[in-house]
Image (cartoon, one colour):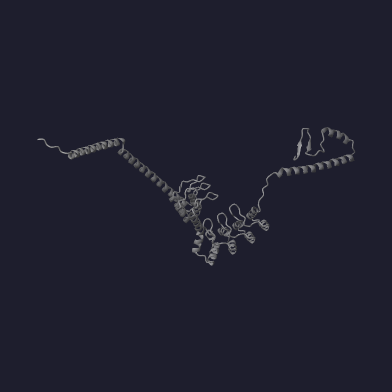
Length: 403
């Protein structure tokens, strides 16, 4: 009963309110008095009692509200930032709410945890009106999410031709490269949309050479940065907030030249990130076979497991690459077996050689050699003594003969 409670006297009362608290004996005594009243007087008394009841109810409601305010003031409240509200409104296509927030000054390029902007979202949802509103308020047509997808990538892969045309007219980059190395035209399957993009590329004089250079620009820049770090004696195995090294990043993106450079610098191939992924996991996951083979040739372990006990083969979705991984794994295990056998043979030969060496220089042989040397030395000493005696005789004066 909200702020009401029962006390030990068998009566109900309101906290902080003392009126209309009546014992049973008081009610009985009043009934005797009421019986003596006229009908008019009873009606007057009833109205008076009703007014008192209403006062009590109003007071009780006030007390309850004050109690609720005190009770809830200490509770935590969840507040959503305007940027979150903008993204949520865009996701449910609430253009009025989006307009209200943009007029309020909310950044149209606000992102979620995946780097998606409201412009990305409306390109996915095929909402032209929303897209035009966002661009009108300054949304970046070349904004990139965490996978480096631009709104044009999103519109192209979804085949939204009218959105593609509008984005191109507003300056969208036709040669933007996402994390997989794809440009918008690479991931467009709708023929009309693809014709539109390729036609615009042709009108702008885009050549295959320019496409290749642009596609490789990120890899080239990374290679230059690492070469500079190496020339200054810097650390080529530094880790980012996810524990990823440059070799992880190069393997994940298929940057063959960067991987070759790092391996030439003798960086570790079995270094782990925060999820215990090694570079070979990254190469397998994103299907970069050439990088994977380079890593294996330089000692990467195809049996390595991440924190979920997954090997590179377990996380590879490309069947052909997975089959190649299994072949490499078999080759790797055969090589290890041959190397182990070779080590055993060399160890056996080494033991035999040491045994033979010990036999040639055993204690008994050493004793015999020492005795022989001593005897030879004594013989030579005796010979020298005899030579000196002969010389003494020959050099001594001769005595006259007696006849």
